[in-house]
Length: 188
Image: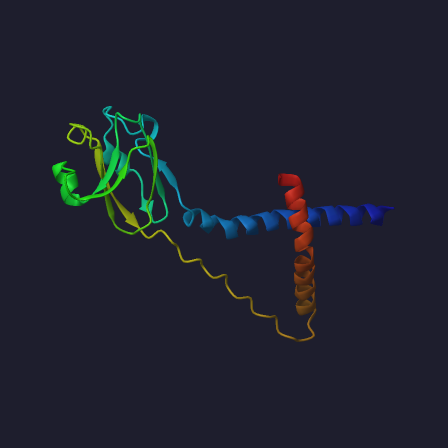
């Protein structure tokens, strides 16, 4: 009876350790994906795109924009708009020329698909001069995934250590499906 309880406790501890190690491994592998996926930014945050006293240049300076990110402009349709313009049109607040794109829906999503400088203004009279303009620089946000270190095989001698390590490694590899099942069962 004692050996049965000891065996169950050993298996339980082994499964707990395996699940813990597997969850650490999964987190380690998926962590870099956060830096590769696109982010969505609401321009002006809670103030949105309006003629309030929001400093849009300061707002833009708080973020690092990467290719693939999306800017969301929320505003009252008919009271504001969004023009993507050239730097010259941005500086002069003159949208007679240099307009690259126009957005007027009140819920505009602008995909930052290129690595470049983007310039945005509101073209309603006085809004651009009143501060409804900003520029951002979009950089290439793709990170190179680090290659995991290669595991060199243990030397093939008849030592007890080699046998013990290879047996432990085999147990670990064979328990990965069970660890995934337990991880999903406990955490989802």
